[in-house]
Image (cartoon, rainbow, N blue to C red; front, side, top):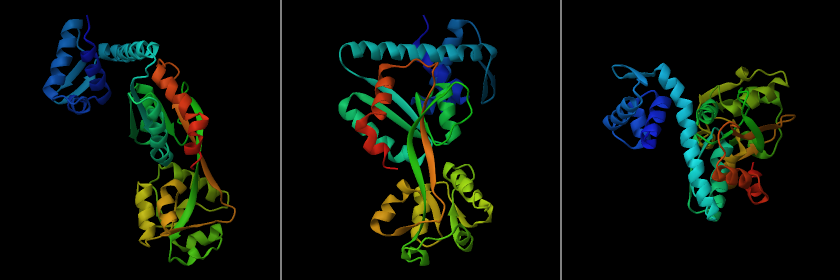
Amino acid sequence: MINLHELNVFVEAALAENFSVAARRLFLSQPAVSLHIGNLERQLGIELFRRNGRSIQLSDAGRVLLPLAQDTLCQMKHIEETMWGLKGVLIGELSIACSTTVGKYILPRIVAGFRRCHPQVRVTINVTSRRSAVDGLVTGRAEIAVVSARVSHSELIYEPFASDRIVLIVAADHPWADGRTVTPQELLSQPFISREQSAGSREVLAEGLAHHGIDIDRLEVALTLANAEAIEMSVEAGIGAAFVSRLAAARGLDLGRVVEVPVEGLDLVRQIYMVRHPRRAVTPLHQAFWEYAFSPEADAWRQLA
């Protein structure tokens, strides 16, 4: 009979395409991963990976086995959680991949509320790129994703979850911090701190500026950062103005270290989605968390944005 632990090791190695990376994720040694894979290959009588030095690739048999192994592990998890559920106990692990500031700020609060009701549940939140979050859902590494835009995939189910407002902030001693409203054209006169090209907030800003005939590349970018919190702190330091999620700016705004500046005719809001894969088995834990996240009890956290 196939060993489920070895099957899990195979899935991690297949997704990582690297035994050392799989070992780190599983808290095993690299030789232990190799041993488990070797045992599984001997039991099945077929090579699952093509090995070339330190490089590995799934063999044809390995590619066939991967989705079957993922479904088997998911079904075993479903069985275990269902049996506990029959005893009135919600137990298990839930993996969520998110790519947004809302995911960072709102999901932990929702998870905290959910665990107060179900203290034996363990939740992992993996903050990553939007594409990686969706890829994690498709490959089975995550059961739920939270993203700020739809990523092309025919099977995924997207549910509007929250709205994230993008605002212009400046340092407290900036000339624009006097309560004025600025025009879109005035934005071209100031240095800015920008997110990287692929950031969702930058895409929303680019669309908003385009409605006013302004190409986002015309902004004078003094600094580019991949972290909204670092951008807020750089604004505090006086490096430039920035458009960021209001959630990321909340600390500085509350302390009076940065000031929100209205921009005439520019109302930047992006939709946040919770996403799931309809072909993955929905465990009782998965379903309970999904329902809680959209419940009136969680509305206060979802409306923070």
